[in-house]
Length: 289
Ligand SMILES: Nc1ncnc2c1ncn2[C@@H]1O[C@H](COP(=O)(O)OP(=O)(O)OP(=O)(O)O)[C@@H](O)[C@H]1O
Ligand SMILES: [Mg+2]
Image 1: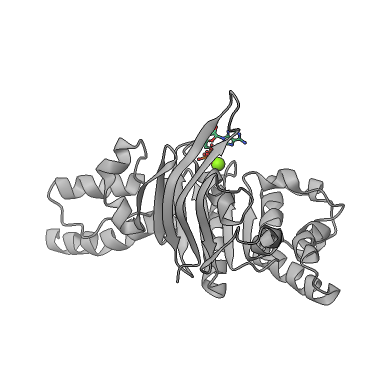
Image 2: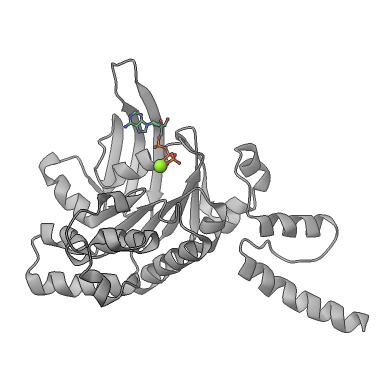
């Protein structure tokens, strides 16, 4: 059974006003337990709108959302429990840090769940360690943290709820390359260690290539493609028609192949490219010597 499933999900903002906007239309997708799914698409394609339905932050205009086989809106009063099970880290989550210490901010989610103080403490420290925030930072005001630290504190706050599904909406936006790699590495590690289902929304094909096992491509409020990362990225022409460039290394591989080099399978990350090319270069070197 999929952990999350949508059936014919549509959402219209501000219906019946001059600002009416159909943001997503007729989306039916299944997300399997333990998946690390990347969602990609242009700005305004409906990524945030879609994922905010997964934890009941938005209610469908039509269609359904299921969590572990149950319609999440069957009992609207129980929607709070859905939000504990499906944790969502918003776009620019650091704007929502508001407590006097970073510790309290990370503790906010688990405190709302009614856990006892020892368990909250254990979870806060575990989550902080996971995202690499040192103990002394926990005593500081979140406003004293750097941009990357604030982002990691916000992510830790949701991890500390230990949700079944962790959704991160553009977790690397606005960070420098090192900050991006740190956060993506932590997300992959977290997913592997805990087996949590992770949904990662991103503008960056590179980020998705590095991290996600499956990819869902959004185009103007609908699903354009959905499959294993390698399968979706092999459809470079279709992606480019949507205006989404495949990662630069993938383009290089495709061109090498077009020019008759036997480079094997496509590479989607620099590491993969390195691993595929190194033996070929070694062979070439030996042959040419
Ligand atoms: N609260 C809102 N009220 C009205 N329209 C909205 C609202 N939020 C989003 N929209 C519109 O719905 C569409 C989908 O927006 P959404 O934020 O889901 O896209 P997105 O893919 O997450 O974009 P981005 O990459 O910029 O974050 C856009 O046209 C957007 O302008
Ligand atoms: Mg968005």
